[in-house]
Length: 266
Image (cartoon, rainbow, N blue to C red; front, side, top):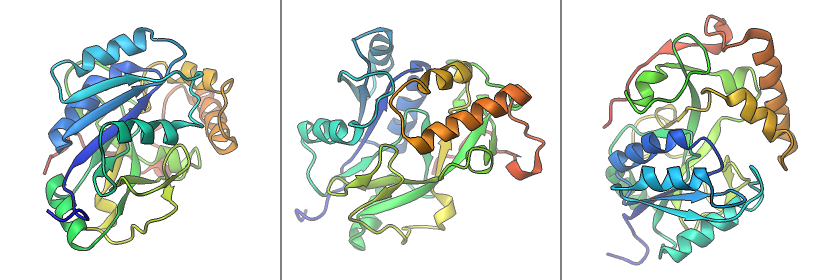
């Protein structure tokens, strides 16, 4: 294989809290076709989050590494993830999935076919679009081991965009040579991503399982952390909304709520 072509795909995420998501996260990306899954635990000390991450990775194609971090401090997230990936032996043309721990990506074709098509067209990056996954009654429901997250949070809607004013574009898959912009990877600084390998751009979705039990307390804590101004405003909007309604109002027409249930893997 040419040194300019690789079909290797590795997933990496940074975990600050809420490790209950991890078993679902690891199972999803293993099923999607990631050769390796790396979980970077970012906590001040090796604590219960680190222990639960190790348990979730046991028996799966996943590795857990720990790097010290202040609470929810992601200003160095990109640098830390790049250092971890370089230590794992990734080359510039290997592919990386960069989801947050509460994000499960969806593709309209098998990941291996998508990578081959990107190689054929010398594409470097691919973008997706965030869609929020909510419990059927709109509450912040607990995460259970079973059934799947898709079934526990079967409703999709546009809460992040419509209520919080969040930017819902995300870079979902790219070569390791691509430099991503910002801690949440909404854009790149050295790659284009308008062409899609299969289907339409809207078929590449990032299912956002943020809306779970205890989120209000977690968000309130984040307001005391070193977070950016735009994200701070999103947090404040969420807390104001949740204090008013006590749930996500899925009947509100602007959210475009729809029942989707389990993901049909390609």
